[in-house]
Image 1 (tube, one colour):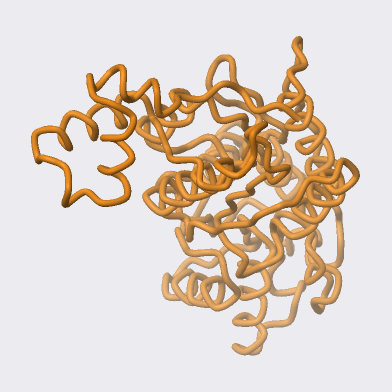
Image 2: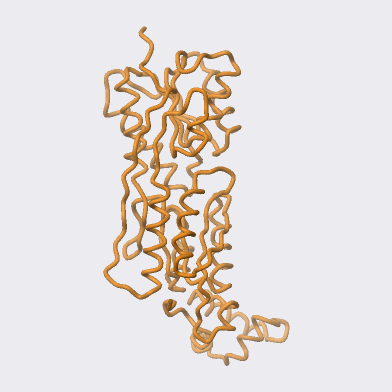
Length: 340
């Protein structure tokens, strides 16, 4: 496995007009380097996107056979199966996986990217396409081999392995409306720097608008991604006088929380209200009633992302992105709307 050429210490020295020894001192013992020289070195490092490759220093080939995956959260199971499949595929080639989380914070993602690259990670798995230009610029300048997953678009000359979040969410909404539901509520994830949450929200909005026939979103609540957040969001929905007949949720944990809150208030499910989730993680099948949801091809995505990243690291050309289909799983939490 050969890493793409990345900016070297010599490149920084040439741009800054100093010796490589001066740069080493500035990195390891900055107090011994004049302030004016440090500023020139820092400017060159920033311009080139250089990161000291601490792991690679001990390897003449600059190979570490490690890959990093930076995911938003480990707090629920939405990424678990895909990450497991990604690791198993890497393991076939003797590659070790390092995992970091961002807490949905773009600044934390940037720190994790720099840390993994600095430790010598040969490539990265990134989740979603929304991140600041400064992060993309670093990836491009450093020539970091990477694959973007869980979405179906990214920047030109980059690659993704994912699915159409908007289309999947819109399809779920259409299925609900075809069962006679006209008053829908939507609990969607935090959209700041999160293209997947925005796409799911916008997909539902577009489907409801296109459907017509009196269908409308009576409530929209933005919430974090855990069960308690779903319960709190459903409580907000019930504060308004008009109640929906069906609630669409951006993931299964939110749906589980909303259903839990509904039952705690004495509601009979699904007779009093239908619920739909997204992801089809394990909890969807053990809820009462079992949760209707969108099945995301996590395993297939993980496998394909690993194969694509390995091919990039192997110097293969003519590579292409992949969009997988999702599948709507109709379970007992979704029934026809009650007749008026």
